[in-house]
Image 1 (tube, rainbow, N blue to C red):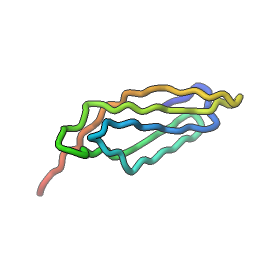
Image 2: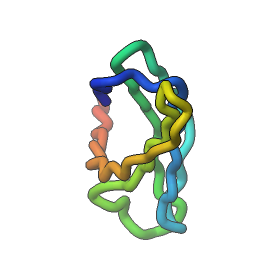
Image 3: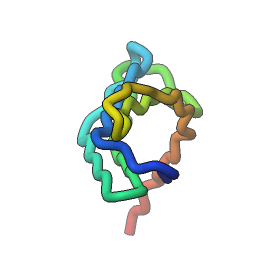
Image 4: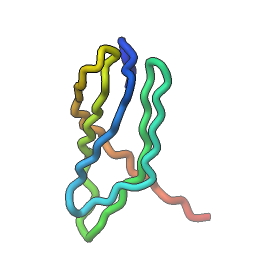
Length: 82
């Protein structure tokens, strides 16, 4: 995520469906860029959804709080056997 006005604090909030597990969440914010990576796994027999919703909450330099909903497409990895 690119910030036109860099925030003081950035937080990422996940609200996955019941049949989805989110783990290995790693976040990084430096100046004008924020990045999050995470692992998504099915928790049941249903396939993973096409996208997941993430709320990015942040504190502005003047102390105000704001947030933005992001619908992030899931990239499904494919294992390769040798």
